[in-house]
Image (tube, rainbow, N blue to C red; front, side, top):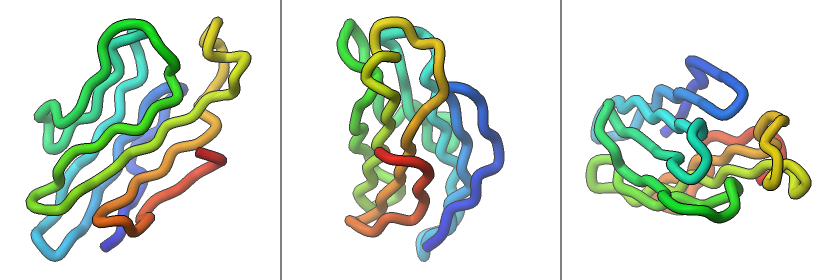
Length: 103
């Protein structure tokens, strides 16, 4: 399994993920405080609503595999989100297939 970053923005990422079950597009949308979401092939797979930290772990399915996306920002940025993500990690069935920064 592997993942390739295809698009990167301040609070967003799009990954192309190759698995034995096929290829998938994973999109993290961190825009809209309290309404962050993860999409798998343009379908909402996990979302968060309400107030709380932007740093979060999202658990969802990619085909029949369990996936987890961990997103982190600096603590001081939780109050006023004016910085970029400090960490972004995708795991599938417990194996890290993509990581950047410290999450």
